[in-house]
Length: 188
Image 1 (cartoon, rainbow, N blue to C red):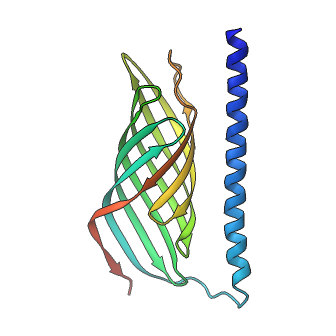
Image 2: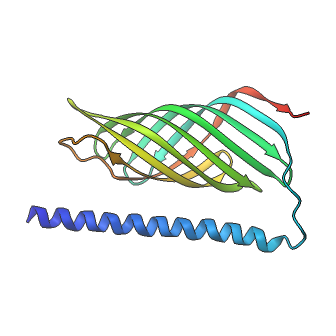
Image 3: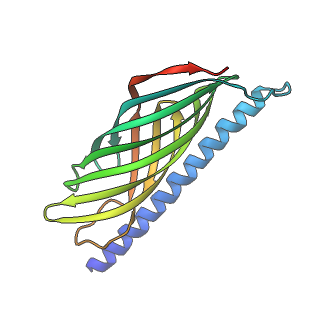
């Protein structure tokens, strides 16, 4: 009986993840199609004119698992014409999952492209889980939509080592970047 419930929960979890990913793709496509339909004049190529390098903090909330975390991030944003922005960065962070009482340390990177302050990003992180006397390791690819320094991301944990406890497979996080050190420089 326990195996039947576990199978149903896994099937429901996969179906929810598929629907979430499908919804995300539809949102991204609608944003890009809307941007294309608004500009009927020929497009000029984007010219990059300035760059911002900074160190900042990224608070994060995981809506699916009751997790909260904080990351220290080194980021770079390149500003261009037509209100285009490209960004990338890497971070080291800590998160606590209150639903499963699991602590997590992570290291990851992200990159994104934004037009008129809307866009998408992709990233990946390595996550080290700690619960009681056990630990585990997972790789988490992430994809997100949002604004330049605020993102809504979906992540999928790929467990590298088997553990006795079950960790969350799917994550749905909201994060924002707050830079506190660095500056902006113009290209010549």
